[in-house]
Length: 300
Image 1: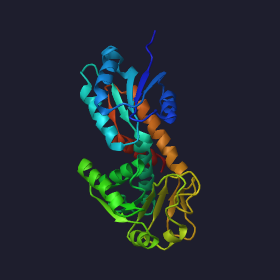
Image 2 (image 1 turned 120 degrees about the vertical axis):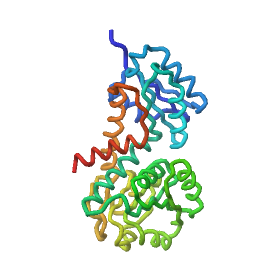
Image 3 (image 1 turned 90 degrees about the vertical axis):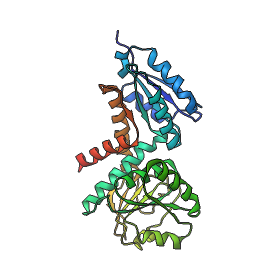
Image 4 (image 1 turned 90 degrees about the horizontal axis):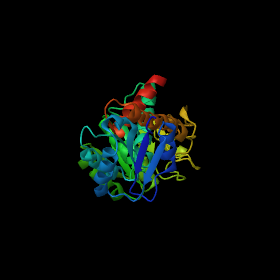
């Protein structure tokens, strides 16, 4: 009798998201066990219980998924899990807190594909992240910066609100990130005047920019919005938009569902990669971006 594919899912929060449970199940894991309120210091003990209870040959039949909300804590947990392995007792690990890694990867991959359609590249482009304090915005900013873009986190309540976050990302990832004030329409206009790409990643149901503001900023070429809850994060960007022109502007929009389609395929693909890997893998947002990028290029 074949042994089951088991996914252990840990989170510092009160519960693992049902979204992630469904995704792991649809990727072929027959047994999924969630663990809530897990602290980073507890990861090592849990991991060693996972690895020593099965033979090394069954490593691909056991996986660890790291959830939560904080993108840095998830990386700390990923590092703790990796450090707890005792080869040949070793399993694959995938971190995707709040789906932020795969969502941000999908967002930046879609933006890159749209820029290429208008003869531009992500490298060298000017990116403004509205909602950069959240997990998706943070990862998207880091990915864009690593790809060579000039990135600014825009604070809706002042530059100080995002300056600390930008500093922590600079220190952790070695990227260059700016922090600017976007607390008034006038200040937003200043930001948009020197922006090629707008990433709208504020909380659901909050409009951060109007169509008129985008129209007044002719350098803006691509607007990506992850908000699927009305109103749109950016007026004129429909959730289904996939490079559609934003009326009255020089920009095209990428909506939440177009981004979500790539995110879904990326998360599914990484779960599948865990099951099929010849050797254990450790997956985070760089891996998500590589897969999302490949999907967008294949679709082009």
